[in-house]
Length: 302
Image 1 (cartoon, rainbow, N blue to C red):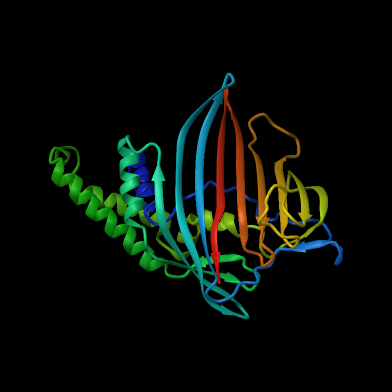
Image 2 (cartoon, rainbow, N blue to C red):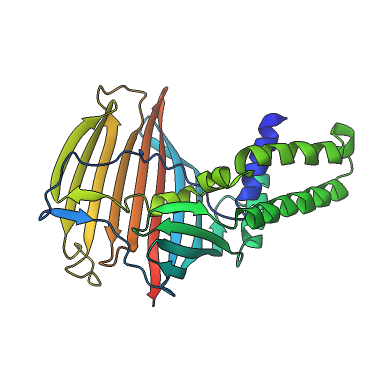
């Protein structure tokens, strides 16, 4: 029952945002940098800046050379700078569209309903002066929306399927779902941790990265970077001031069961992410799990 409640809670939270299994280390920094050969990932954002993005999550398993896609969904969202000060930014995150390819399943149907109900809802978050994602500021409002949706949906399914009362009283189920919800998003800190899509989008802001190839070991992990600046290849809309960050993360002493992480970031000159690609390759017993997240810029306005 605990496992069912957790799955149900995670599904309800999909109405607010797409959760993404980002594994960016907290210390992705180069050893030392020279002032004339670095890219400083800084957000030179302005009030009313508005960008629309699509985010696609694909999970697949590779076994004996065959690939089976087990999850694939795409949603769209809009970010607008609501306020800009010397100490940072306040931004609005608003889901604007969603699509799932597995909506024929019961869980897929619920996630589709939940995510569609979130379209147009507003999440406020803050960053520091460099664009580093800090926290969800209206987390209580987001929490209330999630728990209200949970209760309304449970009321609906118990009404349509009264046989569920024989398995577990409705109020008891509501209580357990709420307890699990509180464990996951019951505080500002917990809520902020769940917005992994925003963490991934702004993951490199505030860092100084040496242009060219850089590799180093730290905390038992091996980091590799290749930082370039200039017009992006095969992109006619790109300019000479844009830049790209490619990185790999793996164990220093490679183990077969240790996941590998690959990230590619393309930025506009003002520090807004143009495109983010995250790929996690996780070797399992007899097969490999592949998780890929892609965030793409759709439109940009000032």
